[in-house]
Amino acid sequence: MLICGLKLTHDGGLAVVEGGRLLFSVEMEKLDNNRRFQPLDRLELVEDVLAREGVTGGDIDRFVVDGWFAPLGQDQRHPALHVTHRGRPVTLPVAPYVDQPGADVLARHTFAGLPLGSATHTYSSYHHSTQHLMGAYATSPFAQRGQDALVLVWDGGMVPVLYRVQPEPLHVVRLGELFPLYGSIFADFCAALPPFRSTTAPAAPDPQLMPRNLDVAGKAMAYAGLGTDDPDFDGVLAEHLDGMDLSFTMGDDLARALTERHSPPWPDASDADLIASLQGYLGRRLHAALSAAMRDDDLPRRLCLAGGCALNIKWNSRLRSSGLFEQVWVPPFPNDSGAALGAATVEWSRTGAPPAMDWSVYRGPQLQPAEGDPPGWTSAPCDIDGLARFLHDSERPVVVLTGRAELGPRALGHRSIFAPATVPGMKEHLNRIKDREDYRPVAPVCLEHRAPELFSPGTPDPHMLFDHDTRVGWEAKVPAVVHLDGTARLQTVNDREAPFVHELLTAYERLSGIPLLCNTSANHKGRGFFPDVTSAAAWGRVPAIWSEGRLYRRA
Image (tube, rainbow, N blue to C red; front, side):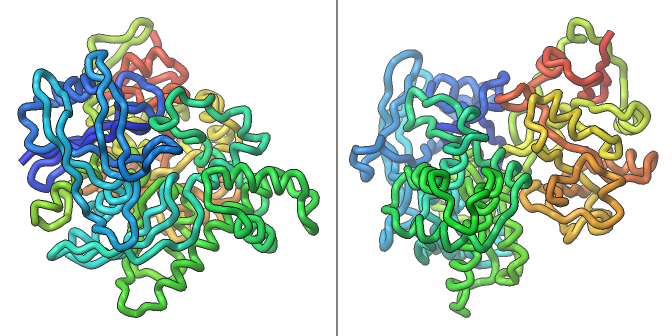
């Protein structure tokens, strides 16, 4: 059975699952240098993406469309998405954004009228919160082991909700809301402050498809490193927030209140201090709420994190180090980049099969083949050892494009810029060529078995979703990957999960004694990963590109 999940709003994409195995998941931003957060609002693109993978609409047994919200002021019980098919408007009813207390979390909504090719298909839809929940659980080690787990879903349009998943037979229970704050509050607060007010994207023509401030939270998480998280500020933040009604303007309202009159003893707090303190407060509030929930001894000590808030490595790390859980799992696509896969996963789970997905993070779009050398570039054969040698000897960055792209927003080695972390000024150089602010961190990718020597805790983290302290003595050896606060957003690799990157790092370690490289995404500013060598060459800000056994250099 072929199941196709569709995410039509921001971070649009599609995923195809067969018999509990992910065949591919394609985000629209990763095709053709599209803009980040690109919606899938033209249904003919579904046909095009399927055709690239050798699939037609007629091959698909079931289509699933991710649930969403209705425009503000309309009935949220009956949302519909407004898209087009070959220029004609199409209205697609979908499930509501979030499940309600007492209702079936896995409720299946069925509709007709999905036009693809010359046919019109029936389709199902599940709550947006449900796809986050099941996408995280089904890809977790807990699902692979058939274990119960908790799933915390905190997305931009919902308050944090805790669920319990029992896999066989599948049973999902909504345990309750943790506190009344929408996940967008951090981004909205930061976007109202001067450092991000000017960089926020202009209002989208359709806020239902493209909500505001999608590009802010990740930058603000880095900007917090310029400030001080003051826990004594928690009382002021709590007083303001507890006095507000739940709304999508709480972040703006909080920023206005704090900047109009800083409460003593913080009259001189900088914007970075405010951002760091709100980030810290939200992490502490999340920790406290889960601590209260875990007083129930019958709950499993295994936690999955899902929703856009699970991209915050500070919050993730706080929960993992809290001692509340035996293990914490965050998929590489906790935000809406995983929504199409999540939707397909829910539909698959309804067949009665065990809700454990056979998947890999490297099942994104295929690399488009090179057609000769790009103008102004020449190429020669170069194996992985040769690539390691070039990085070591030249001490310069290289764009690396190989195989299928990564799932999710992080470049994990198949659409990356690699560079030696030992070179003074390399972080500044990478930020400069990528047109990024100088406070932005560059992540290390490190051999898993050596990571504990360099970082604390140095535990396996293949998806770059937790932070680690850099150990004493290594900050000076690998300065390019150390953030302002001494931490690093570590990616670890082994030969099972990331064989290409593992082989490259092993070869580089033999030459240098250093088991890591800088790893940052290969893309035009504000766009998805490079889909081919031609795009990387047109960008042209590094001296070399390596792809599928060839090294391209300027002529």
